[in-house]
Image (cartoon, rainbow over all chains, first blue to last red; front, side):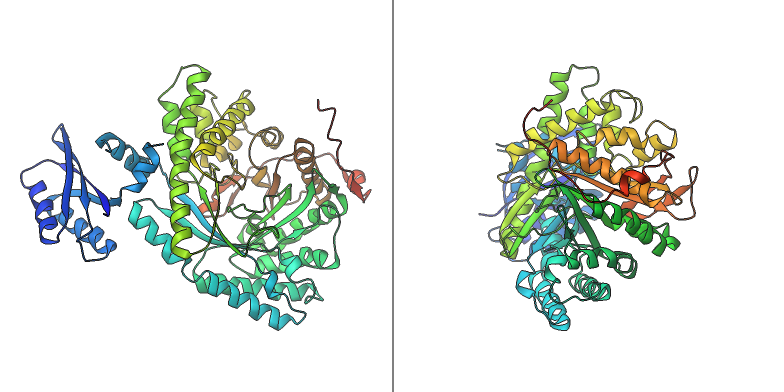
Length: 90
Length: 454
């Protein structure tokens, strides 16, 4: 299983998570976990997703999410989970 | 399971605190390229580098994208060229031809620097060593991407003072040959005592003869991350300060370890070491001087600076060693003046002097680095500064280095501008009294005693 962390930062409004989730549904990406906080109208969201059924290359996911982010006025990043595990777990 | 705050902490380090992987450096042995015919040798060198490193830049960028961490530089280090070229080169121009070949190979694979135009002469010079050294003014002024290092001393062998004397003259000649660019040729030459065979950082990187055929070494960075962490423990005692630096260094190094392993896997080249050095850049906030300021020193160079730097260097090592399976290279804090904007400012206001920098080199990872001095400084004075720094490394069993830039046509009060990662700095005053008779003695300084340490 190829686990990837999606992070989203931006001004909160309706439809942000829906837009991201729609993209995942269309591309066979399964969401394993979601957590989010909203502080003073700003949304911080993190998702752990499984890319094992995703058929495109990783750089395409990055640029697609960038496009989705632009549409909803947020910054969306995709990164392999390992970098966070390495940094925060011994 | 990962927490939201952990993920955002990592990403904040990248977006706000300049966390990056400073370099993925592929070490390539050129020993199997040796030939007594110069053209064959150059063909062999070009072919080996281009074949070995053809995917280096692509893989570096790919890793950067997958993990969301910038991989700033992709570089190559090679076997010291004085060894590789010893049977083929009969004149200095023959060595210049090898330099041009290396430059062409660097352009072909897309790396910004290639290190290893080097000679190891800590006990004496072979004719090839001397020819390579004498070819430096032409080699460094006629190429773009070549970095050179010359080792003049070690704890085991002492100091080759003939070579120290020669290097004073050569540094002046390189400065003269690149005078239209503020003598920037000198920024690509490092003079070493006890050099590291696996250092991934330029300009001092070379691929030691004890290394494998090819190897991946990674240099991490992150002065900005350490600065932010230190600023959060303002006023706390030294225990808290040290723990904070140590934990931060651990996190930064883990990123380097991950990138190194991944680069090694994708390129199918063995993983060598992670170099834990904190390397500043001229970017705001990416400064060693700023960390020292956050530790409670008004400006770097003020009393207390050496102690603060000693803490920083030691805690970075302590945190980093646990984070990586193989640590090597220089591993410590770099204190280049021109490449660190706050360091350059401290020099401008008179807080930081060359003498204080020399004291700082006793406790940090390298030495007198990227210091612009008046263009009319004599060759013997430059040799004297080199000899002092070599002596510190030799006696204290550590790597020390000198990268001085006598900027032709400029004096104290002027600014040297190198641009990009090399930055800018004021010309620093040099002690005006002479050491000419000392340097002119010639010969070697014997290796130091390894007992009676006081």
